[in-house]
Length: 65
Image (tube, rainbow, N blue to C red; front, side, top):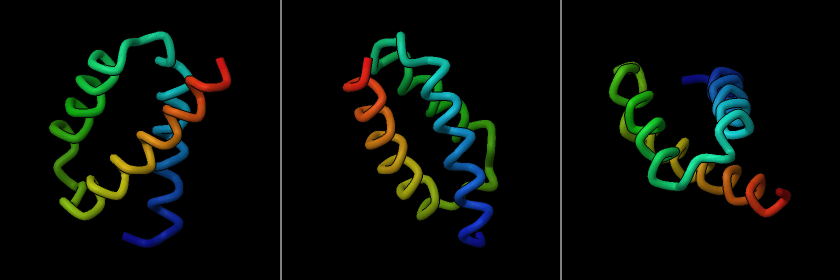
């Protein structure tokens, strides 16, 4: 996947994080797992990279609350 495509996906996840910041970590994790399950186009490497980015973004957003 091209870097620009990855960045678009990352931005979509950032919006998802913003909309779901009131959820517990377990609830949010369930949503992310469902997204990965439903979208088979994510490679294992992309899932790993996204998981790290999502965790960092979520932590930053929760700190700002």
